[in-house]
Amino acid sequence: EGIPPAIAIDQTNPVRTSRSTVGTMTELNDHLKLLFARAARLHCRGCGHPVRRDPPDVILLDITLPGLNGLEAAARIARLDVPTRVLMLSMHASAEYAARAFAAGAAGYLNKDSAFDELATALDEICAGRRYLCRAIDAQQVQQFERRAGTGESELDALTPRQRQILQLIVEGLGTRQMAERLFLSVKTVESHRIQVMQRLGIFDVPGLVRFAIRNGLVP
Image 1 (cartoon, rainbow, N blue to C red):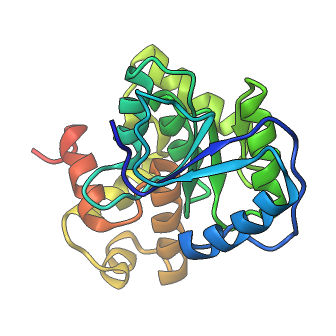
Image 2: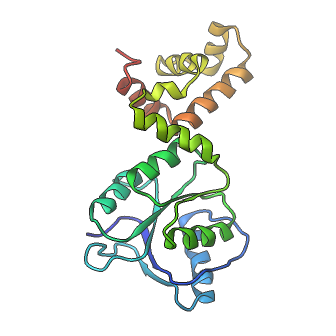
């Protein structure tokens, strides 16, 4: 079965590259051309590859796919029972998102702001059968999210009482200044709490926060 916007790669040897960032998919394609030119046994098969029939070693998968969530795509690949390993690319340096990616079956998680030479390191690691987490994310935080998921704890447990309060007010439709007035906090403090809530949950838009609140019983 084909996989949406992703890049299938075969790699049998370590690769070293320049220090620019991974960036957008267009920039990534340009960087990969350099990477392939430097590694004779590295081969890119392109997008929409039939994974089940002839599985590649690695698939680079964007976590925000049009029409299909990248986490679901990773889970589908895992269910194919093929040796292909998924390296998830994301604009979010979020421990929660990384934990979700690993739970879905990804072997690696890389932030798009990472130096491009880290992509080569990630490919080396996951092709060697090891898990890879980008340097910008705290591995202990990822493990905490994984343990919490394993014990069946509520996702809300990732938030402090104040952060839950901020989430509740976001869901109720209050703006930052309104929240600051209600909680007797500065606008800067409220904005800091908003950012922390999004980072801890790995959700970076208000509709997503609303769905999260409904799913966890915060909204009746």
